[in-house]
Image (cartoon, rainbow, N blue to C red; front, side, top):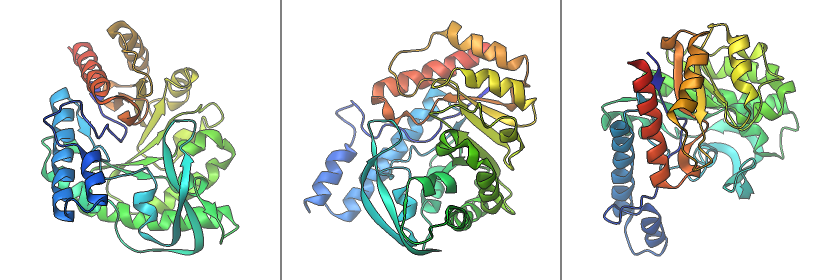
Length: 323
């Protein structure tokens, strides 16, 4: 049977006026109108709501929606010695921004960034929860290197730090850890560097490792992409239609795959026939038990109501296909 999952983030704000509004709570906290404890209560209730919405949609493998994250990099950068948090910069070609890390000195692990988040999500979920980490290469590419002046050394040091996080997550019961490397699609010549970073990041882990790429093409990464030391390869087949054929041509059922066939950056709803065409195509080549169906990237690019509808529509299409 096909399984379903999400890629990472989820809209933080709902149209439901009766639900707690995290954005408003953050503003009130900044104005000293609520306490840290009151803000924490809003965070926890928002995360529980997001988990419940994924469960009710029927998603098999969920995340906590990255509700505490301002962007994909800052939660980790602030817990690494040697990094200063810089100004805002566009995140790839999207209308969202992240705070660019400034590498000021040799990097050293300071503290865990998402271990407690994973434990909270797992304790409040009836479904399996995966934790997402940024890949070391993408982290480096989104940073300003003012110290190393050597990309390989920077990437491998970041991989070592992220390994500590992944190791602790594995010890805490994370059966699947997702590593996001969207930058690799735009720098395919760095595949060997990414391979080396993944070996460092995943060394000795008992967890399954999922490598997710999105926003770009994998045409210059195959077939070597499927030799990387990971268990699952997730690919965006929306942004680049060619990725579906490349996925099927080169994977040859060696890895489990994540098929990003629901457009997470467009409100247009996919039809059942559109999704089933993809399902039929992939199941002819890859065993169903090795396939995850998911959005093309994180859902936070969409309005909350549309993200919910897309998830439910995706799960409904998969369930009907599985019958």
